[in-house]
Image 1: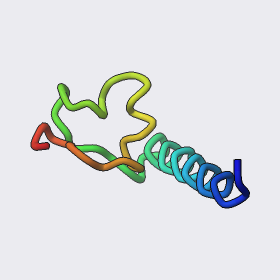
Image 2: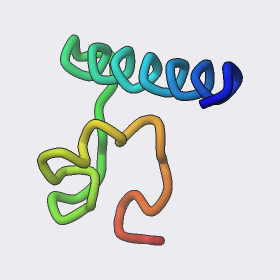
Image 3: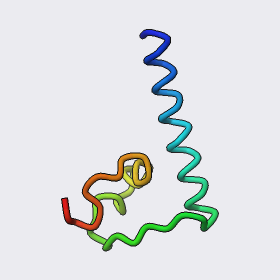
Image 4: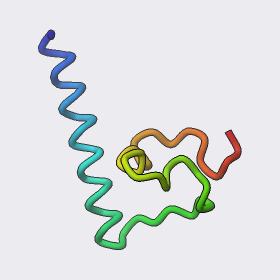
Length: 58
């Protein structure tokens, strides 16, 4: 794996962890309905770093 690819993966994972921490701290909140993909266990990790299709609208 190239150095640039490792840097990109590390930056993405850092953003995931930071956003999850902010969400648990109450600084971020998701207003999606309960059937949104981002409410599922495991996928909720990507809620803030992959903001596509929220709210069931695509």
